[in-house]
Length: 216
Image (cartoon, rainbow, N blue to C red):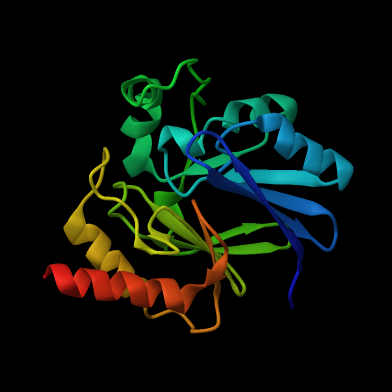
C-alpha cells in the first residue's frame, strides 16, 4: 500500500541543496536533509497541517544539516537520524562552513540516532517504512533512503552522475561500489537527489556508471 500522498522539495542555500518533506495520507511527515531556511520547512508543515515524525539525513555536510536544530527546537522530541560514520563531519560542520566562505555559524544537534544500528532492519516510523541503504563515498556515512518507489540519494547520486569525492569524508573507491549497489534496485524508482532535479534513478545511475568506467 502506498502511504505517501505528496513529496515537497525545498531548495535552499548558496549551494541550492534539496530538502524534502514526505507527506503521508494521514498527514504525518518525514523531513529529509533540511539544509537551511528552517522557516520554509515550517511553512509547509504548518500550511499542510502535518505532524512531523522524524528528521532523516543522508549525510552530515553542513549544507544539508543547517535547519535540523531549528526543527528539533520547534517540535519537541523530534528524533534525528544520521549514520554514525559522519559524526566527525557533524561536529566540524562550522569549521568546514568557514573554510568554504560561509558567514554565520549554524546550530548543531548534540546527538542523533545512529542509522548504522538499523541498516539491516530498516526504519519503521508509524506508517512509513524506510529502507536505509549504506552508500559511502561522498562521505563515510552517506545513506540513501528508499520509501516505496522513491529513493532519496543525498549527494551519493546526482542527476549528472556520482557525487563529489574531493570533500571531507569522500572516497572514489567507495562511491564506485555504492553506485554499483544502486544498480541492483528496481528500474522504475524515482530519484530525489541532494542537488538538482528529481528524475529517473536508472538514468542517473547509468551516467554515473559510464563516468566511473571512463576513469578506470
